[in-house]
Image (cartoon, rainbow over all chains, first blue to last red; front, side, top):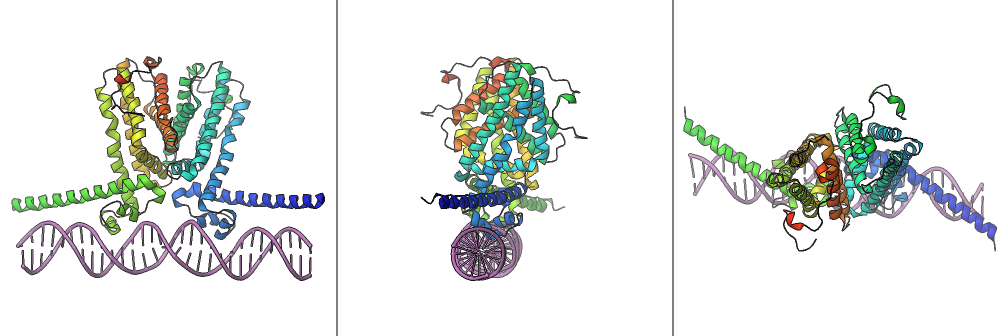
Length: 231
Length: 231
DNA sequence: TGCTATTTTTGACAAACGTCAAGATTTTTA
DNA sequence: TAAAAATCTTGACGTTTGTCAAAAATAGCA
């Protein structure tokens, strides 16, 4: 057969597909940025295009639909969201180190990525009304639940304990805590970060016996997060 | 003075104000219904008017603005939301009775008022973007927190224990749990209600020592809720 | 009953929306 | 380099949106 020609065709096709996917990702990123700034209800296709380097018509070249675009956004969001805490999990060598790292990572997320996370809660609310979003949202929720479960399992390992709470409940508690903190944070409450940290510790104390005693307050050296000049 | 005339004027004025407030409440109810069906992003003023017995123009006679209307809605929502669990709280005479009543009330709310509660989460997400909603949403959240706190305080009383978790954390946990259950419920997960009940019990078991032992499974007589033919 | 004030309807407006198609532009292929 | 295919821009379409004002309808009062 003309295998060489076929290979050539295959290669060019793949390059084309890659290019299309790259552009789709680029536009999805612009959409994600717009959504995180304005929220789902106020985001239009023209606004999204203005946050990219293209005109509004190109969106219908790469996406069949507005729902298609948003769905693609949600999937991209997931990719950049899930792996965030895995580094902390694998590098920790003691219960206290992992607990501190987890608490610090939550606080850092609240401080640095508040707008992205408000988008997540917005989209999750949309899924309560729009069935087209439900599958993707449930999938992301599941992967976040898995992430929490990995951390809790590792904590249990390090503490030499056995987990008795189901993954869904553990996730629900931390998710609820974070959402409350986000609400207060975006409303200008200066104590939101501190309360999130304290709440995290309190939940951990009810999940693990190893955490009944609060850790020493002035022991920043144990925390793996970057040091910051001020809160 | 012409006190009789003044009284007359005062009375008619009050009647007028009452009538206006009544109409405002009527329209707010129609808006609330529309919002709970369509969600914030898809709700228009004309759609709201169609769910009432008036034309769309009347909305601007009673409300200055769309935001004004939605805000009024949120306030009405609060009124019908907060007092729901208080009856259970006051009538219970033992820890187990209150715990069962609380669990059953949560499950009943999920079953019966899922659409109203998805609206609440939707509006709370809007508050993350629209500062005009923030104050009202925070206020409602606070009153829900207070409601949970009343129940937990009463449970502590009945168990002869002292609460060591702050109100905000207790609310955050139950809120997170309910939200997860709502998401699954509206996605058609038949186990959502059962999981909500189990999760509630598990949280209570981590809050109160009196609840370490699970209550007997086949003991429906203890539950104060109406009996239903099937789940 | 007639007059006034209040309430409601109707119709219109400018703007913004999602969508699409035709044409210009760029890239790829031969 | 010329033809072909792809990418992108532009402008337009039919709706729908929030808002408003004028007119119609109703209610309250003399």
